[in-house]
Image (cartoon, rainbow, N blue to C red; front, side, top):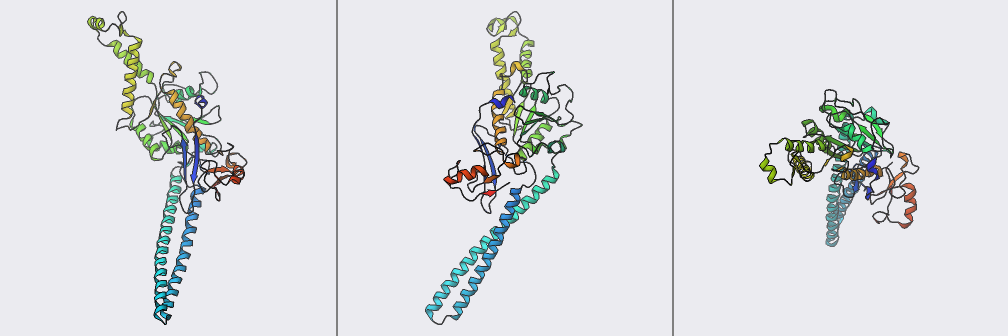
Length: 422
C-alpha cells in the first residue's frame, strides 16, 4: 500500500494485568486521535464481539479471590468465637480487659473481612455478567464466513465501506496505485458494482476489503454491520461523496458504539471545487464588475483566474469541514479526498496516509513482540506471548533474555511473575 511507505511513528501495545482486576489493552500511536484496535488471543481485534481466553481467565481469578476471601472470613469468625470464649473464661479483671481487647480486634477484623468478601463477590458477579453479555453479543454478531480464513493470522484487515456510488472501488485503486486494465484493479462504475465483499491483498501482505454499498436493496442498513462483519475489521474507511445520509450516520454511530477504529473520508471533493468554479462562471457578471475586478478574472473568457480558483477551493474546504464538524454530524476530523491522480496531493491524502499507517501498525504490533518484532506463536511465530505484572507484552524468548535485568525494557519497572495469555 502506498501509505505504508510513510515513516513510522512510535507505537506500543500493552495490557495491564493484576490479580482480581480487569485486563485492558491499549494501543498508542503518536499523533493519532483514534482508539486504535489491538488483537486479542483469538487473532481478532479487541472490539470484536465475544469473550477471549483473557476474559475467561479474569473470571477464574475473580472466582479464586472470592473463594479465598470466603475462607478468610471463616477464619475471622473462628477468631471472634475464640476471643469471646476467652473473655468468658477470664478470672481476673486484667485478664477480662485483655480478652475484651482481643475480642474487639477480632470483631473489627471480621467486619473488614466481610467487606472484602462482599467486594470480591461483587467483582466476580460483574465479570461473569460481562462475559455472559459478550458471549450473547458474539452469537448476535457471528464472524462472517468470508472473514474466517483471514483472521487469526499476522495480517491486518481493512474495510472500505459507505453508500453505493461514493467511489469506494476508486479509492481502493487510488491507495494501491493500481491503474485500469492492470491485475487487481477494482471494478468501477456508476451502478452498484460490488455485490459481495472482495479482498485485495496489499504489497505488505495485509487485506483491504471492498464492501458492498450500505443502505441498498441488496444490503439494507438495518443488517449491514452484522452481515459485513464490520466489528471484526481492524480499521474501517467510511466514505461519503455528498452530505451524510441517514444510512451513513447510522453506520458512523455503530462504529462509535462498538469502538471500531475508523476514518471518515469525504470523497470527490474535486467535483465540489469544480462546481463552485462553474457557478461563478455561470453567474451574471457585467462589464462594470469586470472592470473593477480585472485582477480576478480573464476579461475575454469571464473565467476565474488561478488565484480566484484557489480562493474558491479554500471556501469549499471550509464549507465541508464546517458541515462535518457541526452538531448534527459530529466529525471533528474528516479527510477530504479526490481519487484523480492530478489531485493526489491537492487535498488530505498526505494526512490520511500518515494516520492510516499509524492505525495499521498499531493493529499489527499487537501480534508482534515489541523487542524482536517477530510474530507470536499464535500468529505464525515460534515463541508464546507473555505478559508481565507491569502490563507489557513480550515473546517468551525475549522475556527470558531480558529477565536478567529484572526490569521491563519499556517502562523500566521491576519484572514480576509473567501471566500466559496465549
